[in-house]
Length: 420
Image: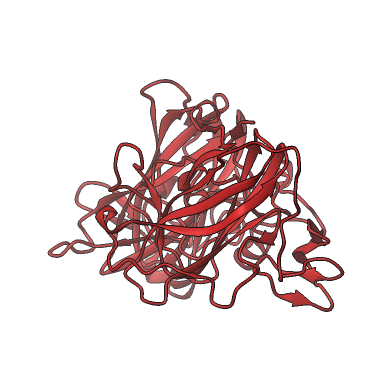
């Protein structure tokens, strides 16, 4: 079983409604043929070739056939420029956007939360890209990126280094995203005070061939080999601090797929999933190669949080019986030298075939991996016993029973069920 990473991002209809790329009511997908924007100083070609970098200047956002003034609320919106005519520019005098003169280039300034700019781009072929964004701020700036109204980043936050001001620009890299050949609408949304200079699309290859996780039991499951969310209606993780780790380029599908991956392990354990928050969970689809009833399950963890704890499910049934408070896992520090193995369960029965392993964070921790070991193979398979009975009712992924499920994902009779 190989788990290929693809770029299936959650639909951002609420953001689109608030920030107004016009999407027809009831539409399920963005239709680029109905988008009224046209390139300014285009075409803007994103080249998919080894060593290629394609520059998109911030001030060259889309216009419309009737001119820049008519493009407001279609290809751009700027709150401050809308309310103050003195913030218009000579570069595009009809555009209701602050295009400021920096000593070396033009830039977008005087931005406010939820301001946005749209750009029509042409991608030469299917490929993956990093996006380097040139930005400045008076303190902390934030932004988010979209392709065809689907988020391809979380909210990206950056701090202006000490001694640097609004005229001092830095490069913030957004993790690689997958773009298909043809025309797309690229969108920047301001989430916190910042100036914007340009975007640089850097060819990164094809991550579908770079990250294929072949995870088998018995064996060791690296923490970073969690499932991709291949269907936006069926989540495979819930993680509060997406993209918060220091290995932001390791999983190339954007911050929404990087569950706080950081380094500082060993050759055998080079990465960990960290920056966790109580309530986080993620899952691994594994292949069980040997049927046995004596599997021992352990997790390698560090934590400096005294309340640190966790739980593990197999096929949505808790291995611990859903014990109150989970398995305590305080180790006294965050470094790999502080890592300890914690016993989860023994005499666990598994059949050959595919299984879903879900890790639940109850108190802040770093996870390096989960180990399944078995001394013998057996043809007599026992059921996994659990006091967290998931039959005869609906349960959240956190194991909480609900009487009347609303839209979302639940466990029902031991199976994942999506209520739409």
